[in-house]
Image (cartoon, rainbow, N blue to C red):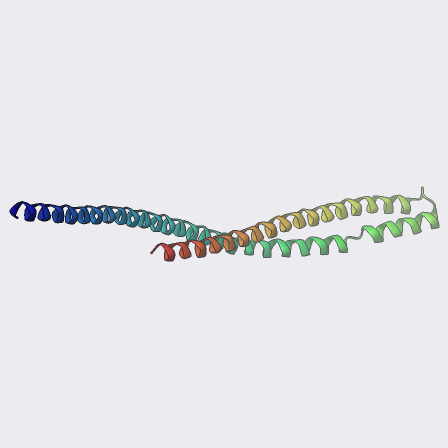
Length: 169
């Protein structure tokens, strides 16, 4: 009877020991999962901080760029206005009129030809300046738009990371 009681007690202890062993393994596994989840959350939070930094820098650059765009737009308007006001077309018409009236070799026609040439150079310079401003403005507007896309993309990623953080927690 004592032997039987002893064996029963030994079997019970082995069972309890097995339960404690299983519980310890489950606790270690759960601890490892919690550590992994914490690392994921830390990674997502660092990524969010980085993306917020990108957004901040992009917004600062956009602010500066918007002023440059405004300045370039004004310079373009002035250059286009100057090109339009250039007397080249009028001088060319006057040369034709004088050449028809007095002949191409007359002093008035020669003087008008010189004026036309000077006006033509001024006109070409003004139109080239306007074209340069158009190109500069287009580059600035393109950069501004790419910054918008960068900001939007960063915001989307932040939302994704925040969702992952919430799932992980």
